[in-house]
Length: 256
Image (tube, rainbow, N blue to C red):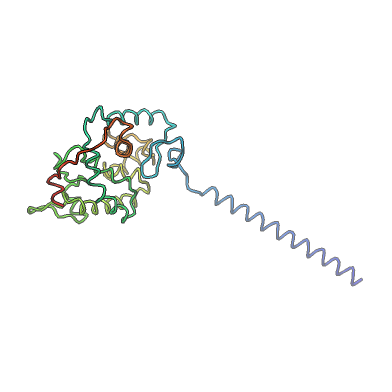
């Protein structure tokens, strides 16, 4: 009788263990499903730079070349930057002088190397002060320059100093990236200002530069950066002859 009782207890114990294991398994499955649904959404308009289908990229973010609108715009921008239209090697010459100073500073601040093309877009074909008051390679306005540590006024303008202005630009770029968490949007914000870009993103309910409708200058800005990268890295492809001469240092470079 005792033996039968022990067998019955054993069976009940085994059943209880199995029941408990089934409950735990179900809870684990529910947790896994819940975690999966909360994963960060990755836009289909952002591609890996090493994707063979994507020829162009900026800061390791490849442009969506499966979008015909983007392709058409990129072709138009590239045509504007080829040698037939520029008729000068000035951009290559400036890159040769500026990049050795800019690249180490970008690296020190943890900013992608492709941001070295911003000065070529901002002030590559012109130097000095813009009609709005922006000056230097990074085209800082006086107020913004002072915010990021540059001295402007009383006969001194550190916006014209490559090293100091690049350090100030890196501080500004890092601040923009902390806000937008995306290098393409960071570049657009550098051109348009973070307040205007954030307002456009909210109004359009979009978080991707390539899908937004922006003013002409900002809407072309990243495309111009990519074009600048292309003609500096692969000048022969766009009709640029080899550069043999070295342009004399400008007054701005002599200042450094």
